[in-house]
Image 1 (tube, rainbow, N blue to C red):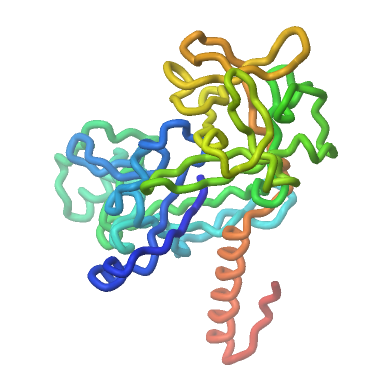
Image 2 (image 1 turned 90 degrees about the vertical axis):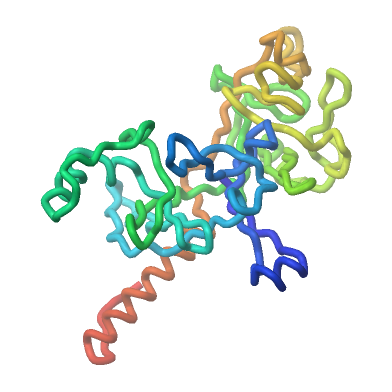
Length: 312
């Protein structure tokens, strides 16, 4: 996901008091109408799924707040995990909650022992690994960890299934972490409220976007129309389609390792993996960690009469 904040118009600021709209965009989702995290109704519940980014009420009100839950300790030798957040919408009134914390047998039994109904049953579709959007004041929230990623600082590689070849924008050649020309970045442009994704060479962004030219691929200006509309799903890189039944998919030539585009419905494609560095850090995640540290320091000062032994 990419956490995007967009300014609003004068009428929204005047009538709704809204200063910005915040979306969680699945930036490589090939179908724009399901490219943002969105709320929807299913079997009487409010659930999550891919939806239209242009919907103000369902996809443009996400906010991540510092969770009051205790942070988990890392299982590795690194520092403790990224601070937990509560994912909220509807002006921070509704929270994302894992269904198992509400509808498991243990949770229902605990409510029954506290005076609730003993015949309470889980709603249809509520499973251990599903989530619902519920009133924060009534059901609380499920703490979520922001996973660190360095896509914004180092880019990523398009690696073939054999693990040896990477796509450079023209052809496939040997992968190398030190080869800057193999690294890609993701650019997002909104058209009528929906994201259009561009793929650019990370260290030369202005004139090196991936551009469709017939059945071939070239590197060109990111302002071109044919530089927008890229997506990845099921390991397929495609443009202007769902990568399965519509659009054009990238395939590798068996003769010179050059890349070509074929209609995705022909089921001819090169399976690609987005390979990331593992030691990066996310700016938002780091900011949340620092906020948690400041809160702990302030609490320690208050408890110790102004003196604190807390160290960052």
